Amino acid sequence: MHEMGIALEIIDIAIASIPVGMENFNIKKINVRLGQMSSVNVENLMFCFDAVSKDSFLSKVDLSLEVIPVVIKCQDCGTRRTIKKPIFVCKKCGSNSLKILSGKEIEISSVEIKERE
Amino acid sequence: MQSSSDPRGICQGYFFHDSSYNKNSLEIDKTKNREVIATKRILNVNDTIAKGMRAKFRDKKVFVLNMMSSPGSGKTTLLRKTLQIVMQDIECAIIVGDICTTNDADRLSGTGAEVIQINTDKFGGDCHLTASSVGRAMESIDLDKIDVLIVENIGNLVCPAEFDIGENKKIVVLSVTEGEDKPEKYPLMFRESDVVLLNKIDLLPYLDFDIELTKRIIKRINPNISIFEVSAKTGSGFDLWTNWLKNQVVLKPKVDKFGGKLD
Image 1 (tube, chains in turn yellow, orange):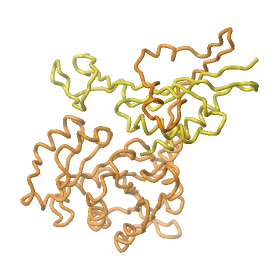
Image 2: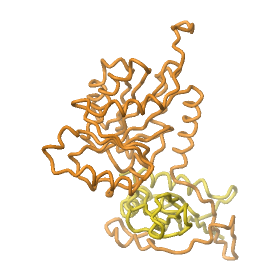
Image 3: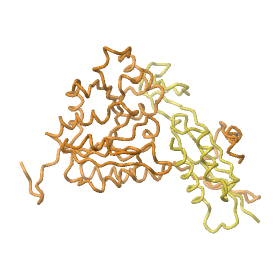
Image 4: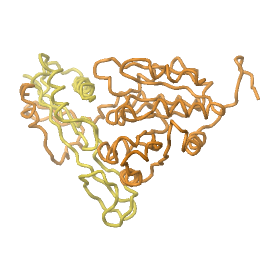
């Protein structure tokens, strides 16, 4: 539901990432990582990004969304596992003391910029 | 990028891979393609503002509670009842968020607590409170005079879980009319929260709601969460819940308007 705000933030961060002094450039691709447990909907974000970048110099940008699975680590037996459902119990030892290693990301990992000759 | 009429098509970048390139700082290749690598949380701006607010709350010794739920779970009634009980002992202020209307603020007036209403009518910001919206509302509250600030977030189990507003604890209200599996449908909210208030338990005799099953589901998502069963209508369970709240608070010495201590 807040994908529009996120699309606007992505554009701000991408523009801010352009190296100082670079004048002739195209932003080719923005690589975004979204955890499966983040509350961001991939299709909505694509739609919003398309809507806000349309008719701007970012209209040709490829927004690449990488979905990061939820990986947990048991604090008692050390087992790491990718989970498909929100059940935070270690399958090996039954402990519920688990750390979420990934799956909550809402981040830009990189911005690919092409410098024109 | 393809046209917006083809949302499936533009999702072609939706893939899984090992993003080992994250470890590099800056790469420039011969074709003058640059990949500027700077992993940055997209909600970084909100996080930064929230961090500043948390420091301010700590400095002023104000305990801040972010109260979230779906619409209609009974947050406002629950809050009014809570204030009636705790206001004798602790000074509270309330920030209420809604897309429109000041109905919630009106319902809370008369409790003795200062109530500030936020209406989020801005583009893109209508489903949750952000750190900056709470920050602006906070400017009209004298933090020196209050022990507790409760922020009643917008009724929504999705986005508010994602936005830090500088709170000390997150609390989610789930009413027993909502269905046992709701925590499984919105796991982030229940994983992030510190307390669940299971509200409207006075209705249990009329419902097929299995409260023990709900508690098991919640504990599976977040084993450390505290669960209180309450009814804002009858007051049932409020002793445990309000004691929890009082225990979070470091009471300030009461001062008069000139800053002198009162007993």
